[in-house]
Length: 165
Image 1: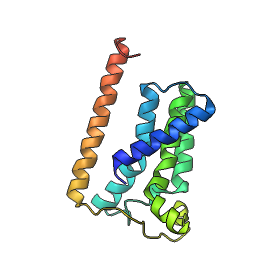
Image 2: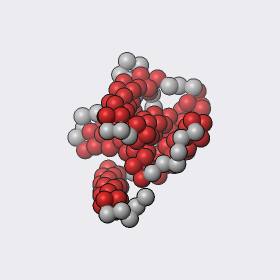
Image 3: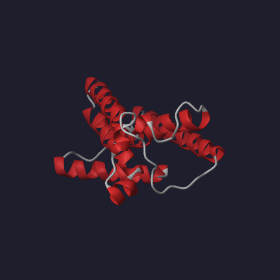
Image 4: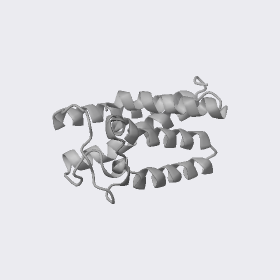
């Protein structure tokens, strides 16, 4: 799935939880948590697989429950420490949505969820997807990362000067 798809799925999941939990409308920090959680596994796995050859697949280590659960817990605890539980929750919801969004075709086709337990369970082929040259993926990844960081810096500067609510 492309990053835009992950962002859309993560936001939808957050809005559902927000509505069911009666949470307030998200501010820019919560939105940043959603974006970070939605793309986090790809920011780790894809470079380790495609550029460094450390992982066998761009959908492996950070796409498993063995990473999703502890990373989410750490982010929630850190955000709790800084009084922003909502940001940690947004990150965790978005991160949990990521592996399922990647594998929804496989899950719907045969109910296979063993990918969540890799390396203990065998890794199956992921259904769907488009093969894109590594160079294109790298450029896209770097562009999105730089754009995202730039937006967060701009919002932070505006917040400090009182022009963002």
